[in-house]
Amino acid sequence: MGGNEKGKTGRRGWRYFGIIAGLIGLYILGEYTIPRFPFGPYKLYSHLSDEQKAAIIPYARLTDEQSYPFVGLNPSLAIGISPKLNPKRDHAKAISRFPSVRDCLIRSEQKKDRPDLRLIDWDKIRTMADADVCTWRIFSSLGTPERAKQWLVFHGAHRVSPRRNEISGKWEKKMGGLPYPTRSFHKRLLSPGMFVSSIWGEDGNLQKLFWGWQGPL
Image (cartoon, rainbow, N blue to C red; front, side, top):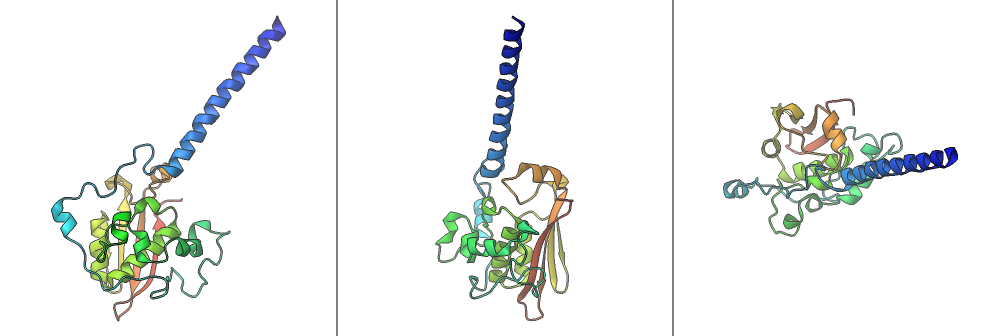
């Protein structure tokens, strides 16, 4: 009898363990596949009014990797030089995912003759490298620091700091959330904020751009 009871208890324990492990697995799967999990998904930019939709920021060109190659924080380093040491900065992979500015936008804008460059598809931005490359594509297409500032304001940057040759934006979670990642709830939960900084030349051309966390992630 005692052996049978122990066997039943053991099987029950493994059953509970399997249920818990399965729930954890489902949560992890949801976090990395469903945008804004466990609160979403919802349609990007569905909240925009007709007036906001009409206030498109003009741009100078539509850039791609051939016409305006990506340059990150340190242009002396080869792109994607150490993805194993810092996989979140694997720019080579991000460049292949987003070869042109159109690839960074939501699907409805990608084939338009005059796409709205404000409408970046945040759901596709999974790493810092993705954010670096797509924001580079958009800012280099906008063509001026003033338009880059308008873009940051549109995306809810809580602090936009225009300097002579630098435009930066900061998002603080306590003031209303972060633009991305939309597929990693624990990062949004743990990080107090994030920022993007862009450096512009005297000729008005974009020279450097990089994103970063304000916290220890």
